[in-house]
Amino acid sequence: MLHQDYIGKPNPFLLGSNCRYMNFPIEKKCINYNFCIPTIHNVYWKFTVDTTNSEETNSVKFSISQKKEPKAYGSIELEVGLVVENLESSEHSIRAIGRYEFTKDTNKMIIDIPGYDRIHDGKQGFFDEKEEEKTFKIRCYIVVKSSRLYDSVELFDFYHFDSTIFDVEVNVYGHQMFLSKKLISLQSPHLYHMIESQNINYSDLPTGCFFHIFHDFLQIIHGVDLQLNNENIDEFLDLAYHLEVPRVTEYCKRQMINGLDGMTTNQMVELAEKWSFWDIVPRKLAQAHCWADLKAQDWDLDELEKDVIDQITRRLFELNC
Image (cartoon, rainbow, N blue to C red; front, side, top):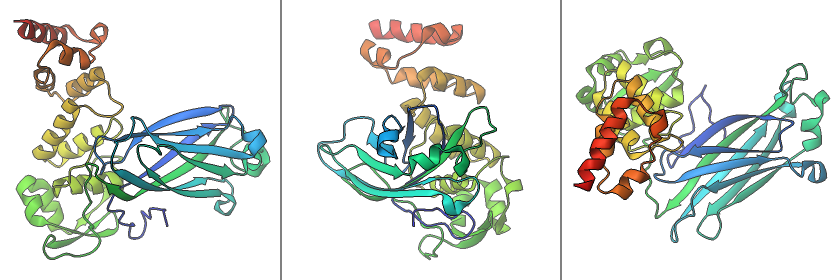
């Protein structure tokens, strides 16, 4: 149920989802990973894979929590599916599932993945014994079941026709999707001509662009406000440049200025320099209305170029005047 089928018609998890793969070295005891759910704004998550007590419990402890204390009101309900992949046969993969409601008083979901003795046994096929670093792979599927009193959005269902929104059917990477030519034509003549052909292939988009990234890019074009992060912002900028969609470029720039999960202020500067966004630093500094605001932006002066330091210094003098 949680598996997102990228060969047939994908499951439209309209409240939001996140699919991740992780390689866990067998000699490690505990690793933390960060992630976000694009449809739920200003909520950042982490999950932990822990094998500290696995020999005694014969299970791998998997936990999810919000990185900051949840709101005093509201709740988010997630359903999580886990698969420890067997390299020899998917039939021997180990699966676990859980469902949990996150509130102020309940902010830690724990799922025990059974069969640690099998996972750790090199003869069971969960890792390659010939590799120098022996790791087993975990697939994690996270689906939002409900979101109450949080700043969240709902995705468009591109797989079922709605005459009030869509006016064209397009084959995208082998998926039949319904889109709005009118909305697309207002933002990108280049993408509009691709839509007119009613067929978009991998070769039409930047190298390495996965279907789920383009799917979310189309959501943004159709007006859905998704939360980006340090892992995907560059891919959205690449698509916006390739397809000549200035509105999405500006959308990405605003999120960079406001702050992305997992991206430091200095990393924001590096990304801005890569894309020649020379207005990013001045706009970021303009958000500081006092010395405390400027300090909270957390600039690492030792790692910045002189021209950026000069801009920070000028803003500091302006705030002190």
